[in-house]
Amino acid sequence: MTATIKIIQDNITQLKVDAIVNAANVSLLGGGGVDGAIHSAAGPELLEACKKLNGCRVGQAKITPGFRLPARFVIHTVGPIWSGGDNDESKLLASCYRSCLDIAAVHGFKSMAFPAISCGVYGYPADQAAAIAINSIADNLQNCVDLETVYLVCFAEPVLKAYHEQFNCIKGVL
Ligand code: AR6
Image (cartoon, rainbow, N blue to C red):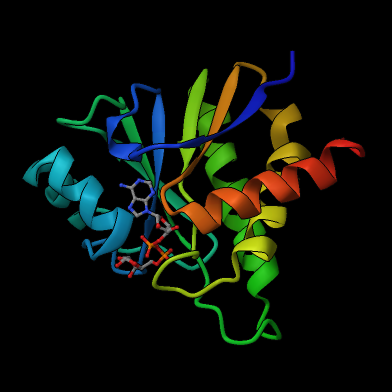
């Protein structure tokens, strides 16, 4: 069975799924944006768990429990900082999605939710990031045999618009 991809506008910290993805930084020690929101909602135990992970490279991912979140787990990934597009940003962003799905496959997750990785402070153009998100998820879904639903969670209106546009473009070829 192939999972369904759903684009929604919501606060990712409220979602009751097996895992939510955090758009973190290489330290994994918290920050602003969705990272700050996830740490606030999960409680201080999340930072304690993150301290034991020794950071994370750009494009890779690591897992912790969700503590006080409705989600059971948090998969922390580090998106690339947009610097014009000639510094492997697209490869690294695709690698974030793939790495998170690899972890979901190992754990047999049925539901997971991604924020728009790199689309905030890290400055990735939303239309390009949306295309990478949708394509890399679609390309890697076959490895996640238990996965039923993947939520692409948009917070800001322009990002939601970009996701819908890219999804409509890509739908025809999936
Ligand atoms: N739920 C869903 N999406 C959200 C939420 C939320 N509660 N809050 C923000 N977003 P950003 P980045 C959206 O900046 O660009 C942190 O400081 C937001 O509107 O959180 O990958 C880290 O520690 C945007 O579309 O992440 C890093 O230093 C998207 O999430 C750095 O920011 C990502 O925005 C990572 O930057």
